[in-house]
Image (cartoon, rainbow, N blue to C red; front, side, top):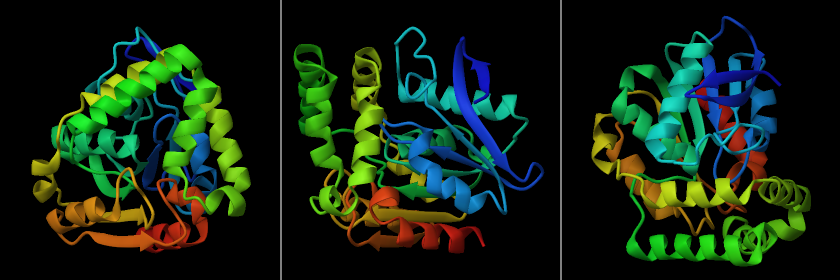
Length: 263
């Protein structure tokens, strides 16, 4: 897996598909890795240049000094695109990936050709959400990453998915448990501190697809609909049999909408 040295740390990424085709960059959620996009990478590699990377501290990418804000993750995205000679790209993202993309399009809209926003929202954390993140940090520090993973999996997967998609649940559990406590805690603080990008939505003028799981408790369909209402001509689809991990819980419908959007 190739690496790029950006902002004094190494980011790991994959670069597949058709070299001179329109580029698609996948940004994963917290606390996952580029591997969550495996099926979607395969889906688009026949028609696009496809890049998927591990956000700093996640997967195989280095954490750096551990001082994290969403803005620094946007810096990494743009620096990686520069490293790969990509001026502008189609961005496909989930959850934290959406926070990175929405802050990125606020800062440098010309770098975006289109947006696929899955299971994400523009609003910043409420006080209640910040308190929950503080509780998650306490769990990691006091009880360990496994205890955090046990709690977190219940909040991101629909109850049915534990029976119907055990392989997906297992894959994400392994990724979480392989993530360092420092990355988890630093990123939780960055998520709690993120800016609200709602005002930017009306200024987005690239084709936008919004996907959300019907049972998503973290970024619910109502939040996705609010985002869609503000972005000109945005398409929105609510996926049944899915919660926060819609691309893994209902990959058939997720991939169908993704394919149609890029066609």
